[in-house]
Image: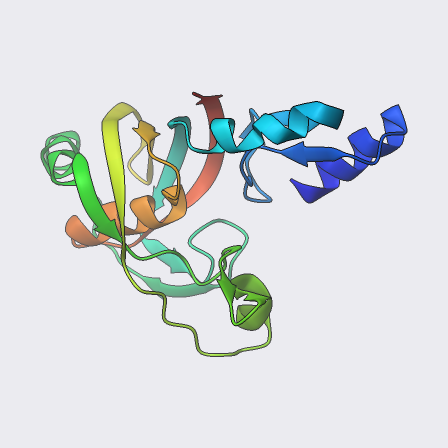
Length: 183
């Protein structure tokens, strides 16, 4: 997200540029960018609901909860469509979620992902997030499925994927993540 802001700043030769919500490095999709005086409106955008599509690969947990991390644990269990649909109801509404250690959250002024890269032990506190909609879009293969979620600010889709897999008694991580909308 910061790289996108820097590029826009350079292209338009404007110093005052900001974004309306950090995207994970692997993510694609909507990133609201504000230029000049419009940067004063970013706080109104950041607090809006966000909508994502994402793919979970079953059977592996990674250190980053996505495809970019080293595999930590594996499982031979693969959920079926009925099991997945049943578990999704547990994640709708206001839920507690533990952010991934590889996140932009600040701990004593330092980004969590920087601490994690330096092998500093991090334990994030659970936080309340709201899941307005969560649905299974399609089963891609026995090893992966595509989902869509509409959620509040502060929701980590990587954590949601990890937690869905755990409730299904398997392991899982995000292989694709796309922000579809903000507000």
